[in-house]
Length: 181
Image 1 (spheres, rainbow, N blue to C red):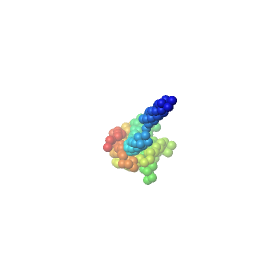
Image 2 (cartoon, rainbow, N blue to C red; image 1 turned 30 degrees about the vertical axis):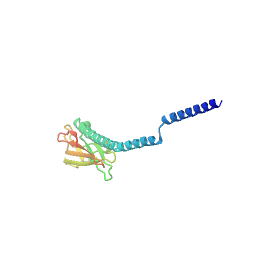
Image 3 (cartoon, helix red, strand yellow; image 1 turned 90 degrees about the vertical axis):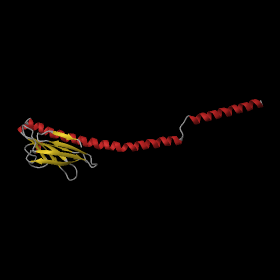
């Protein structure tokens, strides 16, 4: 009996040892989990500037594309003699940084009918830098009825607070193109 009791005790001890070893080997330790969490945090922190730059570039590209579309629309309306009138785009520069552009029908923004205007705002923090030459108000781009020849040529720069910039060129024939910096 004594021999059997000792044998049973050893058997239980061996099983207990085996089970204990087996349980330890199948999980993660706290240190391993902390290392993985730290690595994930470092990788996440490294991607934040990339994501932020992507957002800025997307916003400024969208602003540029919308202004180009408004300029081209004004030119096309003038070429097609829509309303038997020239059309234009007025760049309204605001001191608070809430610049906007206004698509209008008429020989100039000042003489256009308020009902024939469509106002669009640049997203904050975008703003205009205007470098145009020609006749009339420096911010008023008007296209000749029938030909689409602009009264202004030069560049419109769309900038943001992080020094990202996009350039729009208007040439003497009325072509409106983006220029890569």
